[in-house]
Length: 401
Image (cartoon, rainbow, N blue to C red; front, side):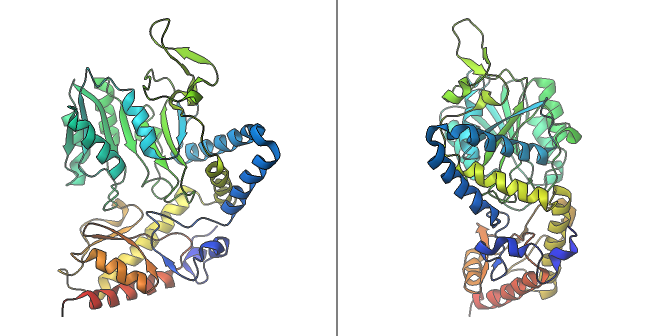
């Protein structure tokens, strides 16, 4: 597929998203909730039909769909299956909790993170801090030196480092994560990277970045278009970590016991961080969407090119408005290639602007004083131009009289 066919009106992909009516409304929620292609509905329907036909024997087909989902995520990470294993979960929080439960927090009661992590991790670490775990929050700004400052914060009492590949609030790509991985490796500290805001919009190959021995969480709710219930924890296949929070699915397959003959055993490979009984419907949907992306040759390289075009167009059109920076502004010092999949605009009236845009048929979201405009590959350039015009009107309406 040529990227130019996604910029013109009509967009070549839009007919495949008819249920979400992407040609009729401007969904600039791409950084949070992209539309699902219509094939996802067929996937959900097949899950129901398999359950009706096979009843409890449905699990063989369900596990097949789960493996297809793993393969889809592995492809996005350019991950070698012989090096990395993968557990699936309904959300990243449940997977992060299993990971945290495997750490030697009694002996090394210190976690290094940043002050810009997503709420599921932020809240959990806040709560752990209340129980006596030392949480070191490295300031994300300036982002160009963030990796070095994180590496410098690691010491012999550190149980883990937990950081993002792309900051969820402002779309800044964090450079130099390999530097953090190298320091973690030197000190024997596991590194967990939240790649959610990178997957399928910013290429994130593990080996090329020196991250083959890292833990990675992410999911399909955002740029992958998989919908809810499709998250993963990628972990080194040779890890010896033993999660305390462990489901009975971790007993499936060949078991490897931990220290001591009576210790709880864990499945080898993907099963080590497995949970328990789950609703497989989301995996049917995800497998169908991954196959749709493969057939349409919507790979991370192409999607990055399209995203950079769209975010760049939004930025140029916004700049052309020449609005009062006290009302709304963007950081023009940040080069386009240093950002992820959305345009971050700061405004003291961000929430009001979001509501006014919604009234004009442009759906966005905001975080505090940041209004986020997240395009997606099924939107054409004309829709983005119309959205910026709606923003101009909204800013004028929101101005104090």
